[in-house]
Amino acid sequence: MNFIEAIILGIIQGLTEFLPVSSSGHIEIFEAILGDNSLPEESLTFTVILHFATALSTVVVFRKEVVEIFKGLFQFKWNEETQFSFKIIASMIPAAFIGFYFEDELETLFGEQILLVGFMLLITAMLLLFADKAKNTDKKVSFGSAIVIGFAQAIAMLPGISRSGATISAAVLLGIDRTKAARFSFLMVVPLIIGKVCKDILGGEISIESSQFGIYVAGFLAAFISGLFACTWMISLVKRSKLSYFALYCAIVGMIAIAVTLMN
Image 1 (tube, rainbow, N blue to C red):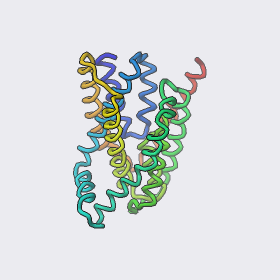
Image 2: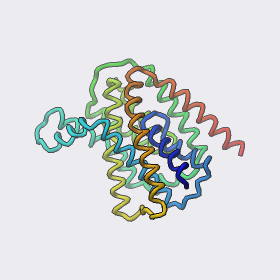
Image 3: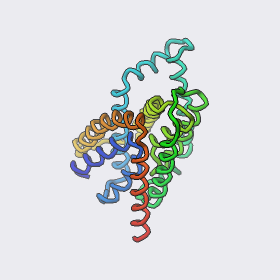
């Protein structure tokens, strides 16, 4: 991997982490296009770095909400901030369970599985279409809806299922206010990403070679900067019910991925 490829993949990760088009699916597709021949451990390290960059961009955009979450955890009062913090924790349970017990099985689904990505992008397109037709309300996230959204996040661990698309769609279909749905969707993944990064570092599963350091930094900055833009833009788009455009995009890319794979 060179600097240009790292920047391209970083921008793709930053944009697609927040836009409902599946970051994992696009990374798989573009790694196949670029002919990524990285060693597995190098590829894993780069993926973790990109995810950490987008998590950091989420923290920057929602810095006030992040402060409220931590305040809620340590106030020891059952107020709105504390309840929101526990809703975030509740939403993490399904994905954390699957990630912990089925990590090896999930990893087998990655690695240029373009046909799978294509079909999952079609599912993402359908979810977005349904959500775009839902009526807007001012309903907040409840504990029950937080669990349901958490299951949507767990399903989105499949390459090609958009995490933001699945969680925002689930929230909107549950009748939750679109802006609140987007905010909850972006915040709920931050603890999972940070936890995964810490787990991989402590487990010695990732390592940064000195020769690759500059490339990793380039990818990190590209993902972080593009993530700031995409996160802010996505909130505005969800509020204005513009998900159908992304549904069309996912359907087109999905069909192209399926067609190209079958022809080869």
